[in-house]
Amino acid sequence: MSKTKTENNDLTASPVDALVMCSDDAEYMTISTPVNIYWKPKKDITTYELAKAMDILLYMVSGGDTWTTERLIGEASGNVKRHFSIEPNA
Image (cartoon, rainbow, N blue to C red; front, side):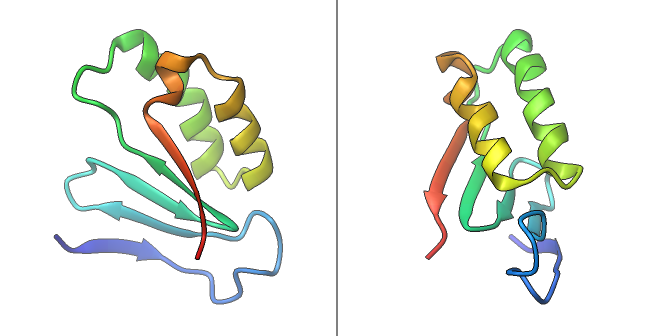
């Protein structure tokens, strides 16, 4: 599967700089910052979960900082959190 990416050469310049990768079929998207935040919706996602996740997703893709994104995911209900994964950027 090929990936389309927009890249900023200096990822340490500010908290909003990021490497954004989206699969061609738009099945998932990855935003790399000090941590990797993965959006991988489960097959049984409900419209309610998607609606609640959209606030977070729109914040992420509009250049929102990683720390606030992590907080938003952390504050989301468990049924919304299950569609996100936060892992340290190695």
